[in-house]
Image 1 (cartoon, rainbow, N blue to C red):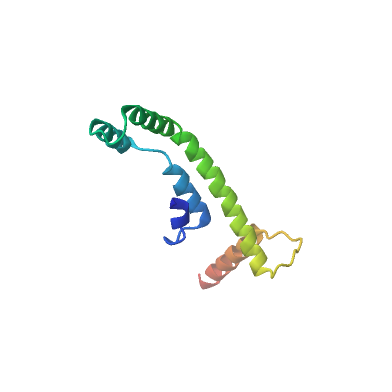
Image 2 (cartoon, rainbow, N blue to C red; image 1 turned 90 degrees about the vertical axis):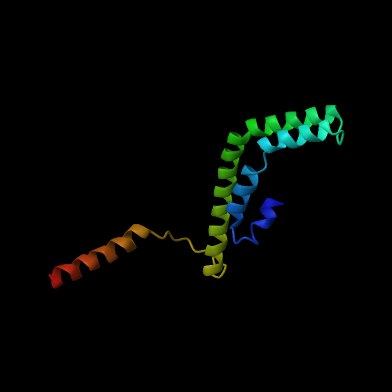
Length: 119
């Protein structure tokens, strides 16, 4: 649900996946809600205990989910970059490497040359 809502919030697919995975685990508020529901007879005590155990497990797995979220987000970032590249190149598969350092180096040298002329 959170992943699906990411598009409506102008999040990329990668960021939507990261947020969705990190918020998947239950929080401390679940302990209060499950205990209150069991005390008022809304759910059986055995179900309350099972739900509480599931929240404890999900909270214990949150650091692992963070690592998984980062990995999935990075993979989606790469996929989006490839799709953008294909869109810009019109679907052509050219075998060339774009070296940003050469482009930036020439611009930097140009700026220094102008600075030297101006004084």
